[in-house]
Figure 1 (cartoon, helix red, strand yellow):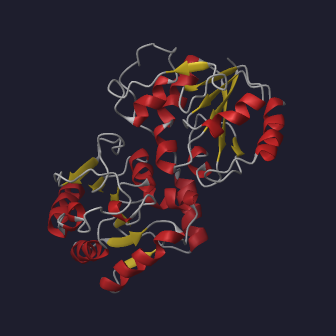
Figure 2 (tube, rainbow, N blue to C red):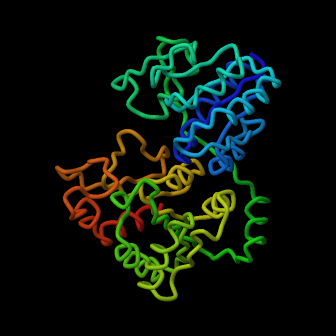
Length: 337
């Protein structure tokens, strides 16, 4: 195999967790040109992976069928003569374009009854492959073959030059010690530690000489602004003020990252930054931060994980009762290392 395509996931964290698969494919097929078809909002993390040659824009929104544009994209891909395609999402729509493009080997899990669309089909054994990173890595094996373990941790790149360029573009000076807060969670509020808790933590970390920078998308700006107002003068709200590529570079400078279970959590882990992660409605059993420098805090209440976007019981005890004092202790321990 000389030339292959990845159909990437639509979530930043999932895309990060696919990187060990890409590394395996490069080892097994020396000289492989590995391109990725990806939504533009996840493209920046793929561009920071050494294994990916080119990222091709997938212009389709969540749930959008758009058969004619898919056919037009398929014609463009057909001209590239890929030997194989690895379809990482399990949806029917994600397998349509590779099928229309006539790529000979179309590899993936059977998913949504994708017989024919996927012609090298893996059957998912959730018990044997509990982690998402393992499920992606499994696609490097023959169907039914055992996963070669261990699976490496995901890694993305941020060079010194890229970091300085980002500082210059944003007009930022690098403080002596940066603690990054990632207070958002795209999935929903049941994954978000309370703003008042983040603010209380910011005050304590500022006493330790830390500059607090807040990261996230434009959707996270309001909650970050609430944190900044509750901890006056201590936080720089960068939510929505950076591109994803710039956020990667700034997170790469952080001495510590405190975050919810989110895409930026996986970015920080892939940059090998010291990390304290806060779990409420979700479970670290499926998508943990894959790093030796990560501490996971979860109260493991009887009602969690519920995997709901909003607390079905109305109290969000799984995060409200995770106190700033407990998180501070984990932060100070991690910083001291």
